[in-house]
Length: 340
Ligand SMILES: Cc1ncc(COP(=O)(O)O)c(C=O)c1O
Image (tube, rainbow, N blue to C red; front, side, top):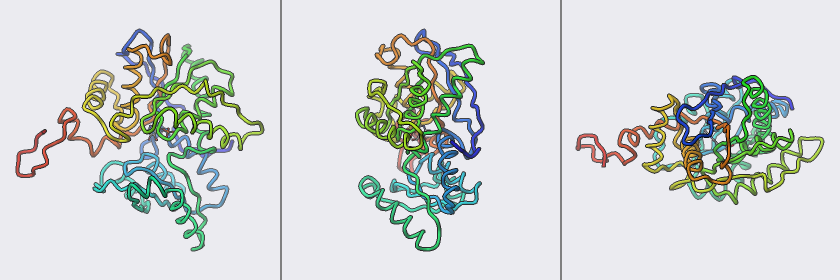
């Protein structure tokens, strides 16, 4: 499949010094696929934006939460490729110009805010309406779903699986288990389809941080159809190979507990690696505790590879929660700044 070259690949693989059990734990630094263009989304955008250019699009329209890493990476890629970028963002009621949202505007993307109910119930319709308006104005619009998790975007991690196989040979390690956060499903699906196509017996384990395992099992099966549309032969995805560990969404998407903040802080100090609060912090914590509890998807694993999918800009805006050990900072401006 043809693709653009936007990411710095291959990304390095490092060993974690303080794993929770005797299993060796490794981390693939996909947070270092670039800076503005960083994280897992870049791998997907390499394929999706190639398709956009082939379709002669001049305007890319996509969506996400206000701190969406995908939205920011798309804004950066569009700026680099000379494409217009329109982002439909879910309004958080504050629109604080920090982190990814700040970068979206710095990179020149046009932002359209949707209420929570519009975002949850009418997103596809609104996305299509905006594309229709752009087309009627003489532009050629290319729309991308949330997280670029569609048939074409799935090629990003399908190819990443092959990259991992090549790196294993070089490093002389065989990873029996590969683990990633699951937000919209495309990263997980790509890795799993890569393993299925290669006839590999590696376990591909996902940790959902937005919805539950049942929802993402359906998503992965749907993606296997959309992905197959680009292949000469249909890819069959046996449902029993979809291994997802529930229980790590916490209070909800992009919401954290004190334990999440504490885990990210301890991990940063032990490893010199910064996880993000929305995806990788929750997923790595989920992996640590699943290993300690002997969860069947990871029990018996000897060499585990965790994919660090990026998201560091999402830390900004949550600084006080880290400084306050996860508690909310005091709201009263007349009080000296502190924690509740
Ligand atoms: C940093 C980060 N990690 C993981 C994910 C999850 O990837 P996917 O949407 O492909 O499931 C996302 C996006 O949703 C992300 O931005």
